[in-house]
Length: 204
Image (cartoon, rainbow, N blue to C red; front, side, top):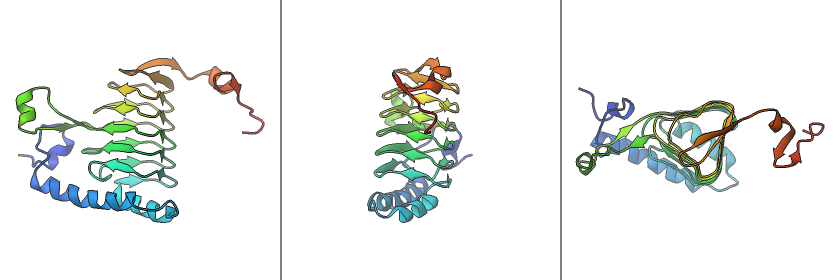
């Protein structure tokens, strides 16, 4: 029979107030508290702390405090040069994978944890977790919410305020609640970076 801690990563129902889970979580949240108290001038200290806090984190990553993470980053896997603006919330009760060069706008939530629809199970405090995969070179707009079990493909842009309930393919712009593909990324995007503003490739 699996322990509650093992069930964090199996998708099974479990009780998050299990003593072993709470002990681990509390220690990690103490470290996250320290990270969020660092000064803007302490960039090297922040980088060193993130290497201790996260499961994996590549070179050149920058996470603007405050960062919120249920397990203090314990199950978060970032590639290199991932950028996150203020108030990134990682409900990292199980694994979150983020590819190189992906960017998060302010107030993004990435939530692996869910609670059963059946009220009797919620009364007993049961929870389940499903891992999330975000590809390489994605742009997750401000206020977006990514729900348990979702995969987002490489190079995709998720519009601000979107609620991502299902998988989104690579190389698209997707927006809305629920989030749906608006269009593919294509030749137009090689010429224009915002509305009618052209990219000057001679200076880029």
